[in-house]
Length: 423
Image (cartoon, rainbow, N blue to C red; front, side):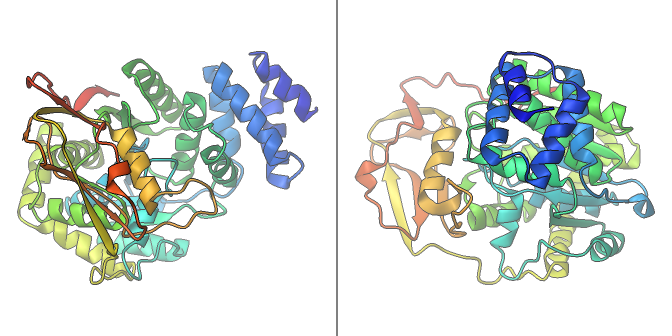
């Protein structure tokens, strides 16, 4: 076999055999296939797609490229994954809620991908927080407090780790076959029995349409069944940011606000829904019973107590969360009702402020980001503050566009949080 022949085959839209996929993955890991060659194949996949069988084979090959985590000693373990969005800090809220309900959450998370933030980057903005711990300590922590969130290890699905990093800087992130195989190879290798996936849909997500979201969800459910994992997918809105804060330490602060019942809105509502499905799967109870338990534990403080326990176990301190030295207010030049907020535009702006990576070498400014000061449906007066920008860079607010905020004379926009539940 030859890598050039395989690239050309996929470039022409032909189906790759299992042996050809394995050849590429094995040789890319060993260094015999170069980054530029893998980038070329990834782009051919983005353009021409893959069949379900090709995707299932790719997932299996990546899954078997390294070690697998054995969580059998923990009993039932429920995991959660988000396909990536702007302002998505749900893991920091959901995991403590679910663990406080008596369901084990043993989670491996990723770093920022393009304009979307990564849970690991957000947790690392907490001074002292350790995302790299041994497997033994990881298992022990889940046994003791019911939850742990760590970075994907080098030995767990190394093929995905290497390809994931390459996709981030080669414009090959937005591909259903690559998203499905990446998510499911990691989740299967991570050892959870049951999985809830938040499939983000809209401008600020990797998946832009309901049609593509359904396709991705069906595929991940199919891969899960083939590997004995029960999967539930929620298709959720990412046309607007999730919550108000975008940026690592800022999102930690907002997660705390939700857990201490100081913040309501789409973020809190979505976390309740995702947690309810996780608890329902984990305890084998109805969604209604699970939701009642979730709301009780959120409102009476048990979920926040679990969050504090989690941070302490992983050596973090909520004292001294990073703050950017510069704050800028961006004001409206129009009057009317706020009918939409462009999540993608704000995600890119947050990256520009220092909260994300444009390349693999970029360092994140943990204190940088945006706080959105208005909600959909609010009446906006001229000179009202639409958002506050936090950065250690010097910027000219005159160069900051307010086009991300759609302001109309009539309030006709209805925002739907969850489009569909798929099992």
